[in-house]
Length: 88
Image (cartoon, rainbow, N blue to C red):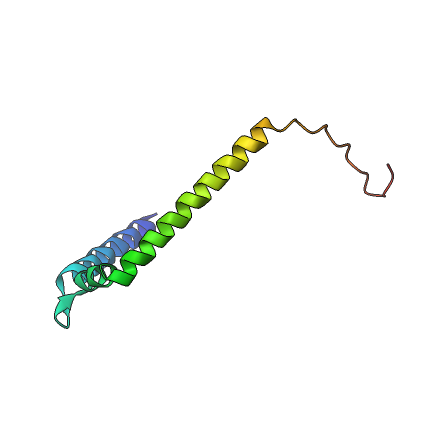
């Protein structure tokens, strides 16, 4: 029990130090966080995000249409389970 507490405490300290380094320690002329922002703010990244958003909207509309179609379809009769020996 005490070992789990120590392990969680150590993991928390490591997470805190890693987060601080990500946001405060420069790697070249920028911090890692600034590099990530610079990468994702490029024109190709914005175009890719728009394409993914468009594809997600299309998929959501298709799923909603299939759900509505399934709701309107008549219920299928219950199928009788087959025996393992192949008998009916």
